[in-house]
Length: 295
Picture 1: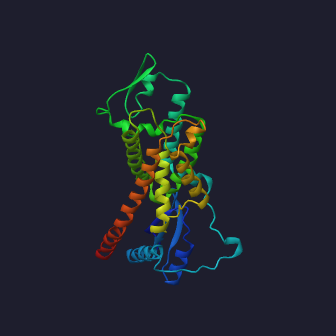
Picture 2: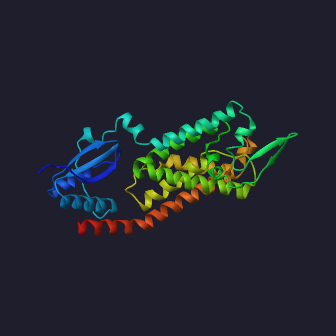
Picture 3: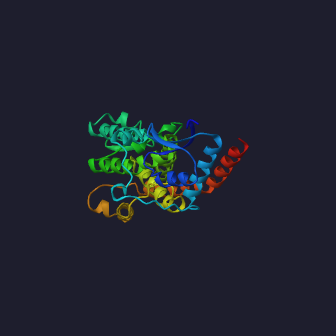
């Protein structure tokens, strides 16, 4: 029978060698190939597709342990080609591009009226004094401060961390989830900075970066199947930097003011979103099981 029924689609970075070994042990004929930055598992029948999904879910929950004998030459799964790496995270790339554009707006000294369109509240400068307007119904301002960056270190580090964490999130969770995650974290972190810091000209993608960090940090414990756990070195640096900023040492060293409320709110919001997804996961799996059974 032709293997033309899709049983599973996962991120291109995920190692499916243990799963394919399990499927061979169970006698499930299948083939795995890459398409549009995803790994696709094909089988011959709907029943086999259901079996694959159940075995995959059990494996990722830790209910099934699979030992795979790897030769020294194949101790690590081959890395996906470079084009697949870039193709797998389009939303992250767009966010990086918009952040660079926000930095260039400040770098080329655009008129303040233009800059005022992207800050959390509008502002004007009269006789050397800054006057802030009301928020009104300009809802884009809840998001756009995330794209403003005020220095080379600010933009470089935020883009590096956004790619490091955001691309992994997007490949695992999908582009739509990445868009939703960004919008929620940006809204929460920008609003928190405004509420706790008052009217001001603030910005940066750091709140989103810390949201991704919190999501990945706790996710590595609650959802081991999400393979984008930050390394201990990254965790130590990011948490250490957060503490240093909150203690005010960065300002003492002359690096300028830091949006601490945005950083902390982003971190907490990322953890909360992860927890909500974790709580709802059994319900979704149960619904999928019922759908498979009814089919």
